[in-house]
Amino acid sequence: MASTELHEFPGLSPAAFQHPQDVQAVENLRKVPLLAPLLKMLSGSFLEKQMRVMSISNAIRLGPTQGQTVYKKFEKAAAILDLPALPEIYVSNRYVINAFAFGIDKYQITLFSGLIDALTEDELLAVIGHELGHIKCDHMLYKTMAYVLRIFGIEFLNRLLPAGTGLLASLSLQLAILQWERMAELSCDRAALLVVQDREVVASALSKLAGGSEKILPEINLDDIMKQAEEYEDTGGGLIEQLFKVNLMLLQTHPFPVVRVKEIMQWGDSEHYKNILSGNYVRGNVSFLPPISEPVSQVCPECSKLSPASALACLSCGSSLRGARLVCSNCHIRVFETWQTCPGCGSSLTQAPQEAMAV
Image 1: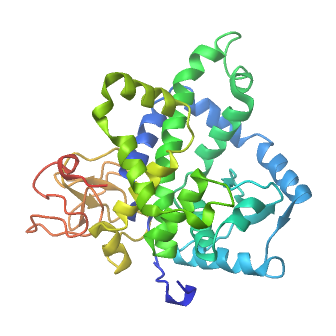
Image 2: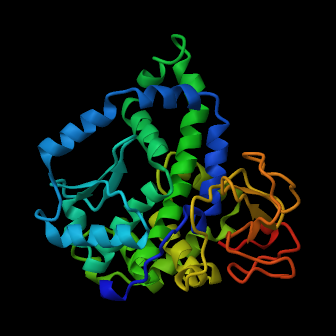
């Protein structure tokens, strides 16, 4: 798809597309006792500066006069997602099919050369959109924290805790971060789809993450990938198989690629996605509070955060909600009091969204 045909989404809020499980995982993560001291230490560390020095010394920083072909895709993806402040973007000579975003105050994206060589032009645009999705969704501080724990692990946490307690105390934090990381990827796959606006392009890029051999990349069949995902999710294997799946997933930083393919193919066919594409999406600084059990929420006119439809005052800032805009609690597009069903995601507006959620 030519970039001139792509829709842009001015004023796009991350609340317009963020995966519900990403939102829930963030709330679970915030309840972990170790989170606050770890975030405080990260904000005052030299880690970000060290990473930037490594990138400057050992990778190529792209710009208007350096790697223009890829940099133009980067600018286009940022414009589509309405990201006015661009992070730095680097290309590393590591020959793997991968990319990552990093940073606390100053963000950067790194693409690996193996990724650039393996993907089509549109697939590369999708991956760039995915990484920019982490920035759009305010994932970066948590992603950096996850990176620190993977690299330094218990040694890092022992600086926060009494001697000998790091291993035990960090377990819940590490598991919570891993769960959030997996769910955050689902939000960013949606960002990738918003950028390329072709679900098969995103699915194809994800498939290449699963089977990275250059000899078979041109022959990947999406229909067969979908069958694999169905087979993986089949519950007919009994309790032992389900326990094995849980154990296999616990230490993963990303959902399995074939599962992500099925997820994005389904969302790309949803009314939620089609409404965003047509311009019916949440704008501005709307952000999530803990999941709201009522099917309809109100957008605070002062702070733009969400409160249940029954609330008289904003749960975040305390402002009056008189005249507040109503949105679906599931997909967050605008709705009206007389509507029975959300036109965006199909959820009933007269029952809890969890009962009708389709993601």
